[in-house]
Image (cartoon, one colour):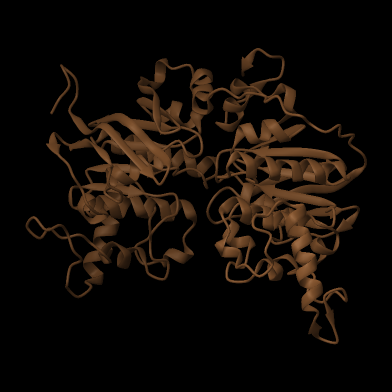
Length: 522
């Protein structure tokens, strides 16, 4: 199937929708990829990029819409169907078996056509010589330094990524989907990836390239499609004629500084002082010379596209992750890499993943005293004072509006919003010196979200230093006084919330430089 006097359309999606419960991940999306082109797919966190990639690869089925692959109807029901049709999805979290060599990986799971039933692994003995020769031949053709006989564990991340692409081509891939392939790479490794993609494109391989790094896309992509909240807002724009400033703004939409009844917060002395943090991460950029100071009575928002160091920052600030360099001090006490020291200094954490913060099979009461099980208030001579625990749990649940405030209830039986409020009650009952809240209102209904926001304001009002790490830009606009932007593991911008605009955020989150004189992008 071809366009009018244009190149062949390698892949086409028409009216594709997909929901997960009440969340509409894709909403009647149209998308096409031409042979011999790199089509960039961009958008902020949760825009639907990976959902569309998984549908293209066969890992998900659309709720509605049609697909065509190289001019033929395409209806994959599983990932193996996509592989059989020649679609390879190289994901951000690479899938090579790390205890094997590259040559062994090329044979492991090699697809084989079985009539119309899809592809299955070859039921044959491993031929080490043939596998090694195949890796060496493809590496020479692609100008890659991928060693056939080294364990995947021993290879740098950039080489593992090259090996995954090489193996996909060995398995007969006719279409590549690269999902945030440069997110964990440095400049030199990214240059090598760009060169490889351009070679493959010039040889006729169509590539869907998912990324948020607009300068990188300007170097390698031919066309660009922007998704926002599951909808196409820019379709197939020629990258070379595109205004990257406008594209960056379209990725995140309008940021509204909400009319919030903010308490009068007067910042005091520095309570949280993180200096020169460096974390080498296997997946993602880690942290690269990040410094952050937050005062008493201050709320600072940390924003960025997912995977740009936010998780590492939360781990380091709360003592759960020891940095390779740098220090974290709370009220001038060094808590670097020590969860016990952080808790002792008054650091509290609201994790984004509620399952990581609660013992779902334990009661509300047990969760609420988890940090204080040995307190004389709740135990004497090793015996728990059940009535005291119950009284404390009920009072705390009522104070933080946990519904129902029944101490004996299993925590996992609560709604998501009430689980979040339960965690807030445990972490914030003693007025923390530092509160690190990751996506605190994510997925909550308006009532529960308001309750959590009020608790964050309350923590700052009582003299705490509050850090909000969030992908929800409206949440940050509502809560924070200052904003820090992470991109590639580095702080790329800092500004007061009153200076927070769609154009500025879109630019610095996408890796573009912002001109502080107000002239736009440098």
